[in-house]
Length: 341
Image (cartoon, rainbow, N blue to C red):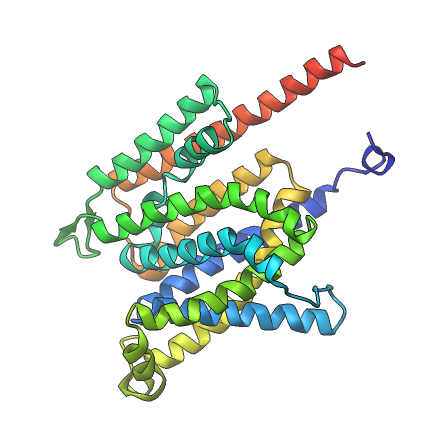
């Protein structure tokens, strides 16, 4: 074991707590602000582009002031090597936005509930990682939670007058988002060597190149007329039910989500680096619960029995999976220690 690793002190409780809170605030604010804007705009991809551009500008500002150091070159070797990551990222973020546009904020976690089972299946297929029976049990619990939400959720209106099933198109984009998220975990590992295993460089190139790819995609999917209306047409002057114009909502929402999107890049790395996998997953579970509560508070979502059961099963399955994987690592290290004292 290298000396620096052996002498490395575990993070203090204050640092761990601060990191978890930082991650929770950034992740929750991102989802809530996204939903706020997506309720008012017809341009989810243009909104995503604005977020990426703002994140890139913040990276550059931090570089200028010496807060971080960005790479100064971009050659075709890097572009080619990162192309699988950029494709997964653009598709994944696009599917995320479309999913959130068509489902309630409190149902977002359910719509993307197959991330864990698909990730395990992807790892088994692509890197031949054979899951244990306990891992398969955790995946079964999460999958059951997903189908409970999809099949049994009936959300009453706040007045209790009507009931609505979850949006099928929202669920469709949620499943697609789950696939891209699962692939992203595998792709990131293969792309890190392209940038010298620097997570910061990878985050910078990921934001920059994703913005470049997304710009023409906005025209391809037909958002051009809606973008022009948002910037120069009626949407820029007509106030909506929120008391703001769609352009004002877009502008403020882009600024907020651009900032928090930048922080998410840092928060995700910090949460995994400073905390244990168990702590990271528990904080993710807490995020899901708080996200559902804020959905009720801000957007008047109604948590039906089916939706509540679904969220609970997905969270329990995810936490159980993380505990099982942690136990497997501890057991493997114990056996290795017995063989190599």
